[in-house]
Length: 139
Image (cartoon, rainbow, N blue to C red; front, side, top):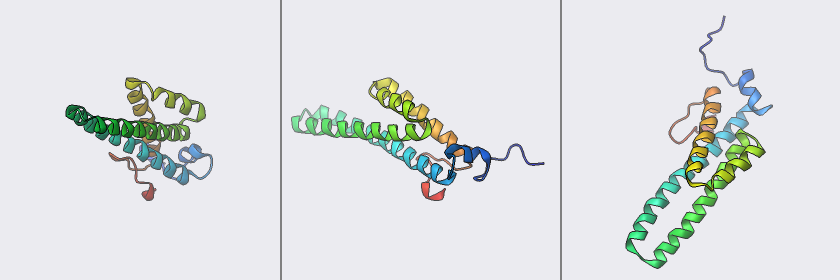
């Protein structure tokens, strides 16, 4: 009799059902995309802190530069969210999640839900997930 509390192994039917084929490549892909989303969150926080300092200085070129940088980070965040949601939930949900990224408070909830789903998929496969996601090279 096997241990019912043992985490699923890579060759198990649970892990194989995620990708319908090569589960290791699927898990690596989810881990890479999750890292991109977490990087986007970190960049977003950094840009917001720098933008607050730029607003305090009241320098027009600095404020304009921060606005351009903020738009670039927002686009990167939306692309990263689309890629992860597409891999985890499918195309329809990925489009909805990307549209929800345009709404300020809802975008954070969307981000947390999609990130949690990716984390649960990786943990169900027995992959160790840390603060910056799972290491794709370790899968």
